[in-house]
Image 1 (tube, helix red, strand yellow):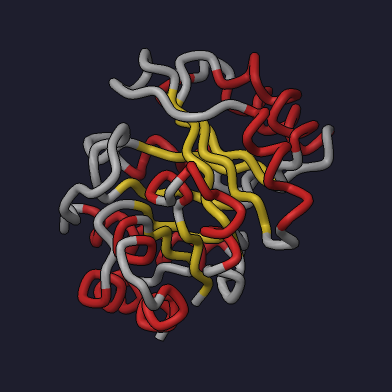
Image 2: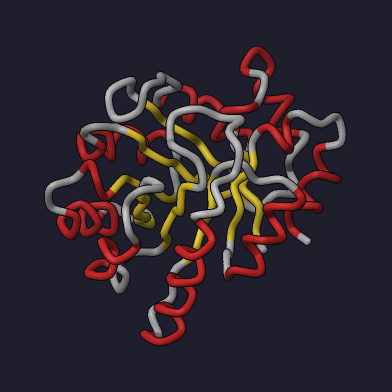
Length: 211
C-alpha cells in the first residue's frame, strides 16, 4: 500500500516545512481546482514548480478542471510525474491519454461518486491509474462515502480478469478506519489530507493509512 498525502490540507504559509514532515510517503497528491468543474479554487503550476526541488516523491497531480488538456503542458513542465483528469471533463478521452503518454508522464482517469465504473471500461487498458473519488470533488475534510467500495472491488476484479495493470487510487475521507476498508476492497494507493496534516505526528498517520 502506497500513501499520497494531499497537500491541499497542508499549511501553505510554510509549505516546504510541511512537506518535510511527510517524506516517508511514496507520493504527494496535488489537487488542482478551477472554480468551474468544482466549486473551489486551489493552486496552479507555479506552486508545483516551487516545491518540486524539495521532494523526490512522485508528484500525483489531479486536475479538477473544466478543460484539463489546456493545462497538461504547464503542469508537466512544473514537475508532475503523473496527471489524472476527470472522464466527465474531456470529449476525447483516448486522445488526452495519448497526449500525456507522448509527453512522458503517466495518465490517470478519475470519476465522480455518481459516475459508474462502466464508463471507464473502454480506457482501462490504456491508463496507469484510476482515481476513485470517495467524496464529492472540490473540498477537503469531507466524510468517506461507502459507495466507493463497490467501485474499488469492481476495478480490482476487472484488473485481475483482464490482465491490465493500473493503480487503484482512492481519495476522500481517508483515515485509519476507512483506509482498512479500502485496502480490503483492493486499493493500491490511498490519498489522505486532513487525517495526516491535521496531526502533529504525520509519520504515524502515514503508517496507519499504509498498514
